[in-house]
Length: 148
Length: 155
Image (tube, rainbow over all chains, first blue to last red; front, side, top):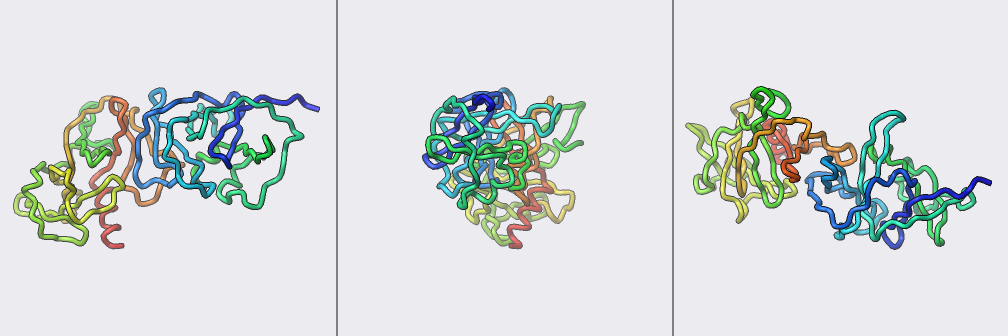
């Protein structure tokens, strides 16, 4: 059986958690300055300026049917590639708390629950149980492509 | 001239219009005049306009946007200026109210970027994003803004 792999557990809300691979976490930010962009989707109405880049800030609460967050104190910047050998790109997620380091095993994997958000299904790579809660692994490249 | 506006050996001159807590930019070459809001006549030329501005012998419809880019019929309390904007079609000239207006020259166009795909929304008059001194500027153009206004007024 393969060894458990390290990952970052991202707490979006009490009922939403995601995991990303260790190497995908670019930086955890506390209380970043956010910049409003009008006429954008409800889940992505702000950007942050991080390391001289404009990075979209995503509120996954909206896609899960929760009210939009008003608390932007915890933000994680995530690196991804659209394709292998392409330059790194970045997206940021609003969190409810700082990320936790966890270890994930294949045996934790689980299936899609019926109430899983329709818009996230195409970009969900896998799901597993952690602390008795469904935890999603999202394909950030596909999510960032914008056809939600 | 390029997508950033008037180009002078790689320098792009922009007019920055502050509306509430957002900043819109237009190429400086598209700005016809900057007037005090007191110059605006409140007679409406078009639905959803706030009034009329006389530019030379033409009357231009004046539009007021809020931070969500919704058209407001009444000029907002923070508005101080009317900026007349030059559209390629003279019949489409228009003016926008704003709280403050100033010029900025950008040397390095790499500081602007496309709106990230995950944030794009059809019909938006924002064409690109630009950062100036760690602040965000929402880039637009006469054509993009007038097209947005026309579609909003028509709807």
